[in-house]
Image 1 (tube, helix red, strand yellow):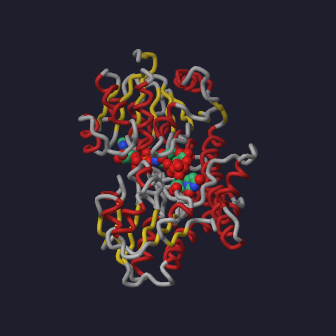
Image 2: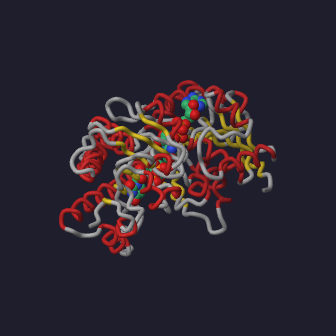
Image 3: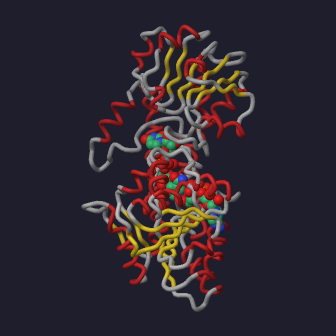
Length: 439
Ligand code: NAD
Ligand code: UDX
């Protein structure tokens, strides 16, 4: 990769978004410094160790460190000189009232303000409520009245587990600014993305801020919709897999985000849908659809255990459950808002003993769960179990040996909460089998 000296980048925050942003831009040839307050994280990254589980990240970090255009530090003052674009990629967690907690974003703005030197674009990548750009701008202006800067909204749409490819090959890039100089800098920055280039949508800052919430809420809506339709399929004897396939072939609907399951989790959909409700309420606007999406999902996550209990004949008291998958989705060790946790807790409450295996998320799960036995693989997990619950569709669970599983279980039952298998392929081995929305 050639060295691209024309723009220098700093990211504040080296989490999923800040780190992936920094690493990918450095891989395009820019000089990038990722700054994080977490000294342990920076130490790890400088040693080429990854603080997060993300396919392909390690190779990119090592290459760009080696080639001398990627730096990690805790020292923002050392990173800022000559920076053209500083990305704010810190967390915006859910506050108690459901709103987005902006303390980390405002702290980052406060820290960078006195360090501004020459025209600098401050690009907010964190997901932030409408008007945050205005607040950040006002704060910086107050601290550094003479500084030459523009605050831009540049929301991020990457998914965990596919972060590098999502970042490098996005469906679109959204840039919210009314400042022409900032617009030119951002257009230059995103130029090397691909031969054809993703569409770059320029809009105003508020629209860009709201667009991110609207996109996540819409995807969450598709999921809650298909989950309710899956329940309807069960009630009327229809098959949601065929139904979703048939629906998705309509270009106006699209096939993505129509996979039914135990409810959406993760670090974004749950908090961002709640934050959208808070934004609407504060603006005096209605967001009734999103309100119901949140309700449907919460109820679903809590009620999934009853599907397992029904499969076990109405009670799991004294039984052993083998839980396959703890992460909120495959290819990540992230367990934030994972549906696996309420399922486990409700089964334990109903008297079950829980064994669990996840290829990546067991260490992350331990602080959140009690009385769970962690296993070395799916077969170890199934030993002595009365029922297997497949909660996360890791590829590790896509070709299980049902003969081997059945041999070590106390009873052959399989609750496939991600519709990984065809019912007849599991029942053939003598298993009682349930899935989502299929006869
Ligand atoms: P994260 O918690 O993984 O990382 C945030 C990092 O910022 C942490 O390492 C923290 O130590 C650091 N930090 C906080 N304050 C700092 C400061 N003042 N200076 C330096 N470092 C600081 O968070 P994330 O998952 O990367 O999310 C960041 C933002 O991006 C959120 O607003 C989130 O909603 C949004 N987002 C996340 C994803 C995702 O898949 N995780 C996708 C799109 C958007
Ligand atoms: C999401 C957004 O997709 C991404 O654009 C945003 O930047 C961050 O939030 P992420 O949380 O990493 O990404 O995962 P995603 O793949 O979108 O899945 C979210 C949840 O929805 C998972 O729990 C997943 O299992 C669930 N899901 C997804 C379904 O239940 N069905 C589907 O069809 C798709």
